[in-house]
Length: 164
Image (cartoon, rainbow, N blue to C red; front, side, top):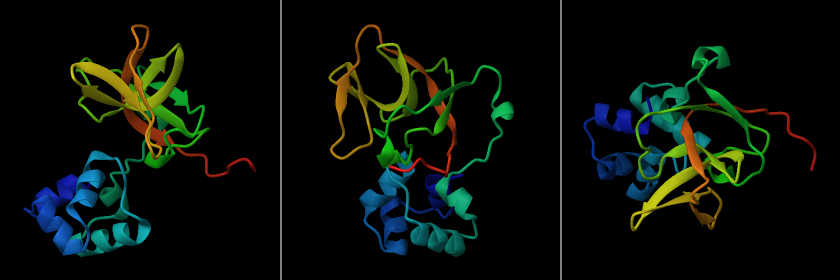
């Protein structure tokens, strides 16, 4: 479940959903694509108004690492380049291989120069690029040695962060 499914359940367009909750249609689009998430207050407001849980609104799926399957890879994030997607250094991201090509804008596990990490994949003019979630986003053209490991299927967040 997530914003898109809730919106469709209500039989609303993105513009209609945006009007209902007093936000711009761009915000709804970004929530649905995972580029951003509603803030806590908005997530609670949407949950109460639609009869869904905040987890459902945010598309959170609590998964046990063992339930993800043996083919699932785990990547510990090496940096904060995906902080805009709320994935920080030290968080563990679970990747499941897929035999389908990722869609433009998908959050994927990727091996860049032999280092495993998470990025958005972008396709522009027939070329493949990796983008991070910082502002402004860093964009790197995919190289021949880079490879897609699979789709992000889960995240373990360590709420006890090291002191800076």
